[in-house]
Image (cartoon, rainbow, N blue to C red; front, side, top):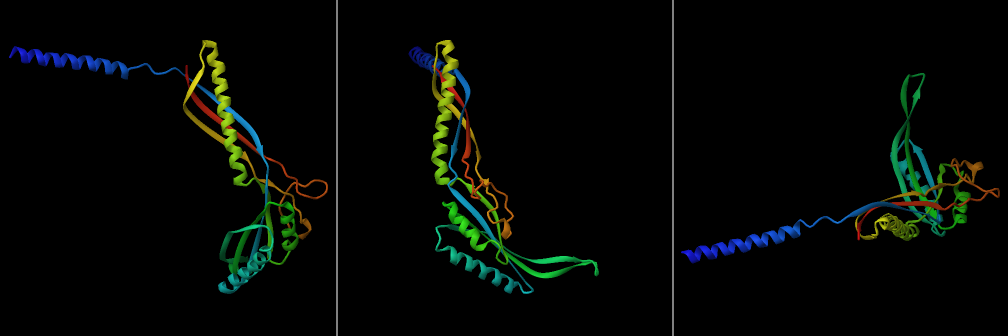
Length: 242
């Protein structure tokens, strides 16, 4: 009986020692850290120019209204197939158009109006200028939202590189602060970032005399001025001090 008690006591004692060891490991002091921010400012070329062509058609019949608008859009897109452009439909709606009749003191129907808008974009500014020259001012065709922007495929690698620069900028700051204590920044324990992109640039009215209503930026020769996209990346990072 005594041997059993001694054995049990030994097991309990060993378990207590192991518990103290693991407890000491678990209670290891948290590493010293330093929190800093880093920035990167860069630019990306605006390599795309786009214009929106909006077609409207009105008729007493909804079916006829949609057919008229669709036919005119088909004519436009068929013509643009021979151009080096990308196209996508951005609007298609049909609704009853009304106006207020003062004599009758009520709203009266003018018919069904159908609107279809397509965005036309190209890598060449001259291509969009040709599109404007061809369609601006035609009956029931309205040109709007002329703009220049940076394509996603151009923007992504520049953004990724700028993010890396911002992280290195944060590490340099962390090292500068830690050096006063004879330390340096170690591994990154946490990081977050934010971006700001000033991308879309309005372009001046190339066809002001033909009904264009878009404001833009032209040089003295009357062509579109291309400015780069401004990119700002800011990171907040926590480094371990070593």
